[in-house]
Length: 151
Image (cartoon, rainbow, N blue to C red; front, side):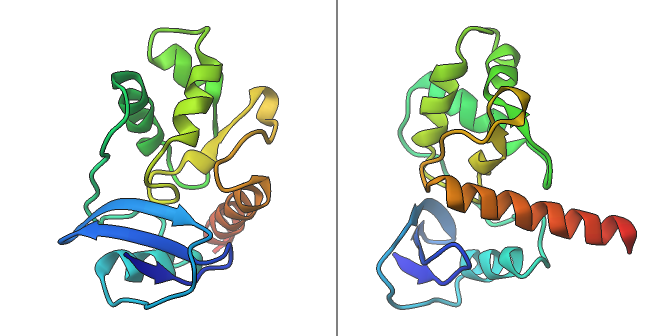
């Protein structure tokens, strides 16, 4: 595991070869790396990258969690979707809470952008990294999206 310094605190990144297998909030400061994942995370936080291309592998999780993570991975940069919308997309409109739990178990946050999932009406609820980090990530993406739109 190596550490990437970011505006939301140090991120621990676990890799297997070139493949990211985990991202952890609040990692202890440690050795940084030249790994492509580190480079892409730094570019993301600098507002220079909107789509990660580094390979990742979602390890563990139930079939439902893996399906939720797959839906989360499709959310475009700078956009948000509700827990209920993901539940509906998976064919179980009543499973919004279960979607929230699956988001909390996402082993690769930021790269698989569970911060883009919000409560009904855009309400800021739940995030494994804490609501302050979620807000910062959403604000970063909104700021960069606006800057690109206005050129």
